[in-house]
Image (cartoon, rainbow, N blue to C red):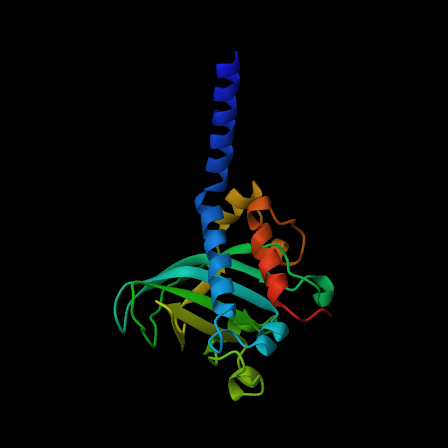
Length: 213
């Protein structure tokens, strides 16, 4: 009986571990690592002033590039927006970046991309983000762009143009995470509670955001 009980415990533990290692959970964890590493890199991360003014954040770990200089790209990641009242962040919604080609290729087969959406109309324009934690939030890039972007490949940071690419919801990933069909609009309006696999993503955004109101 003791052996049977032990076997049952091992089987249950294995099942829980497998549940945590779904592709969606792994991608969320990688997004957390990318955001932390970028923000913790002195003078190379996203300026705090820009993050604090951002309406939404998009993290796409391992955006795949099909060619050097010109080529297709494809990546899957997550976005979160300011919660109602501007305090904290919503549960993450799954997104995909598809198509187009980079104006600047910085090497490597995969590139981590972070986008700051500066207002609700941010899908109208994409611009390369200023590099450096202390970069001025008064630059023309900040004043005129509705989306700022950063990329990182093998520890190298650079502004990157995503002209020609599309950013759209990833319905399949949302279904796996939330256990039902749910639209990004619902999630980003705060109508969904973050699943357990997404709790660290939300807490990480809260940790690095100094804006409280």
